[in-house]
Image (cartoon, rainbow, N blue to C red):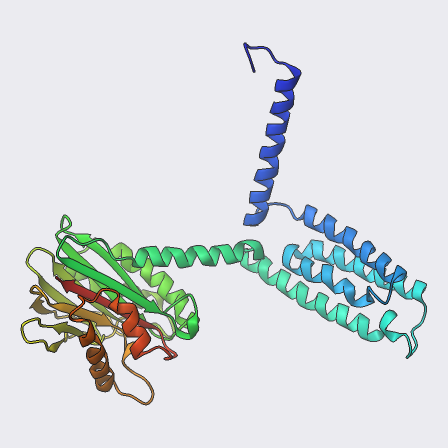
Length: 380
């Protein structure tokens, strides 16, 4: 609007702006599963007579079974009630095609409506209806479901990201889910507490593997992330144990190791809940030493006690935390796996362990069908 004058050009721009905003909002709502499916239903209903007309005109090029195409699309796009309307249109199209094309014979069965064609279309429609009902019960349309899973995966990655450390420290982590999936039963939560002076890291291995453990790991990672830093270090594992017990899962146990590291002095405490020991490389001796702490599995019994072990990371020292998928297989016990892991890790002593976490998993346990996690803390 120029000088307060409502000209036709200004009014037209206003109308176009409202139309563009409405279309954009409708598209966003549809993508999120909050919009109406009338547009998709209308398009598919128009597609059914178009396919039927193509079949009648050119049956050799457009087979009667082509009606499965809008039915498949409807199973992914439409709600169950709308899907029934599409099925009624498809059934009507089959009846019309059968009446116009006439009865089939062995010579021209491929261009006629046969009992096999009807069975194929009916079977695809049945499975499409099952998919639509499942989506309706879950409440997540297909167009939003993949985005939601992607969002959850990214949230887990962000939550597992290690905080930046002051100069003189190096940290890195690598996670590998079983079977090449995107979700893992192993997870890490970390935070700098005490005004940034202390690094707290919790590495947890939930019972099970892959997608079987992923949903529980997702719930626990959020709960553990909330507990970390909100409680004194000695109170974290008891609180986590109590939370796990309250879930009352059939397969609800987990192992966990909690590192509390003073970034000024290098002193640390390790609390363990049935987890494998950590490994410390001493720069003075060049040897790896196991750091074991006492504590039962999480989620087994109430009132569990977790006693820490203490140590110090001096310049050049390395602390390594890992899960059992990295060192234990059906044909190799844990001690052999630890020996192989430390042997491979020795190759990175001269390079300062830059990029070592990912390469160690690839070298030691690349083809292992289990979740694997490795965390390195180096004092340079």
